[in-house]
Length: 419
Image (cartoon, one colour):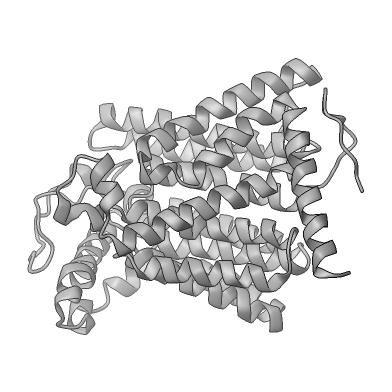
């Protein structure tokens, strides 16, 4: 087929997808959520986090109205959800500040319930794949904003947030992380629409945009995910085993490794190291020592916000509170102990096993995206922050859009063709 024919086919596909969305009210709140998720975090992280449950509940109401049924999660997913709720419930009761922990527990229960039902909904909406072009378009807007923020030293973030001009580039790191996280399901969606070379271009531009910013966690996660994506093309089973076993080992061994030596000696002496790497290493060493004092059940939910830094030299890490360990693996150990870490390791191993059951491009892109989540969560950010939890809710949904196919349930009011 000529280029002109390919372009015409792509335009027709996109046109048909938008017609499908227009004729299916159950897709409207999802389309809105997909669109704003691409870029709204650069304007308001809080708005992005709050729109996830709002759009979900509208979708759920429309689905029940049209199909007269409630999406039923699989027993396996229900068991995972129940174990998670039980685990954070125990951590809540054992928290150093139960009143604060109750609020966090409630939010996590709501968001995890949304994630559970989101996946169940995604498997029942037959024309979910019609959201692919919108997903790509929204991401391209976000990618442009990411590049713009990096080159302008956070001008847009400074304009829309109450931060000092000199702090804008650093505080804009979290939206950059979301761009890097969402790149992998979006790339998979794009692979359904255009030639693979354009998909690789999207991944390359995402990495370039992240390196114009100060978000080292986004850069690190993006590079590792890109390496996994590329290497899994040639050694799929080997990479799958390395990612699965490596993730489990990292989850179980991280606090022991951090407590085994003074890692700040290997962190470098540059200004960048003193501002980022060394404070993080010093904090992880302190947290590792605290974990060994309560290794079985930890200190309770959000304990880092209330535990004093007694015993830390604080040569590099400033402040009187750590708020959280800036490491998701360490945070699970610190708040939930060995029990939480064991369940997390089991969950990661099970997830990678399920990814291994996929074929071809879906396996590679899902593995890259999930690895990106693990890497970024292991080097930065609080595990229970709303913007991060919202991203974790959205990632499986974006993948569902990327790999979904038509099912036997017709969409009310929608006219579409399977050609």
